[in-house]
Length: 278
Image (cartoon, rainbow, N blue to C red):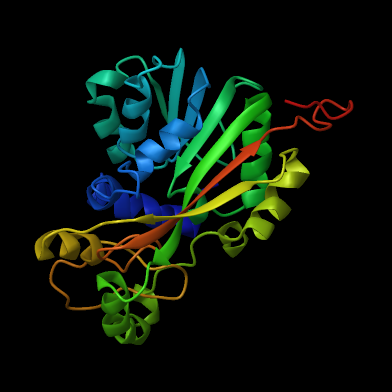
């Protein structure tokens, strides 16, 4: 059953397909990689990879073109038909399995993948215990889950200043215009992440905070901050030309922090037997 939050996300991305890629793909970490390339490299040894919340398919296309060779199976799942339509136009994804759907009910067979990725999507999902259970189900024992989660502005820069100026507008908006609470705050800390994923059979998470440099000309920075939604408590400003929603945490301005997290599926007790290691 589609939730209010999912309906909001579906509507937003129907109006703004590829918005996350436009905001983040140009950003660079200290070693020159984008957050998408950072995530791609986390599953360099995987041969059957699922992108959860694949959007317009950029991450999958990077996987298809990786120097070590493309995975034999590439699959993507997203709520947005408009995002998936863009993904299907990418030349590198001609044979990718791209499906609409919810992470809480994955349309894939048990143990089909050895790697699962999610870029700035897992943090927006509800019913996260069910998501964890479904990811564990479709991963083979020893499979890897790697995600990028937003961690907010790096401090003292454009995103932070924008929020300080715009937040009073968001909070003054009528209730009917307010954005529903998105995601589960537990996934924004290592301890909370483990509390959700370890009961599903995953090993303790490897956790890293990475600064992403989103430096750009003023019009590019404005495109970033002007088309994003804020985490739970903010609301949509009225009468603001070009801004269709507040900022998503972890994106915007000329510097943002992202968290990468990698965990292994230990396969514990899913078939009634003893835990199985990688």
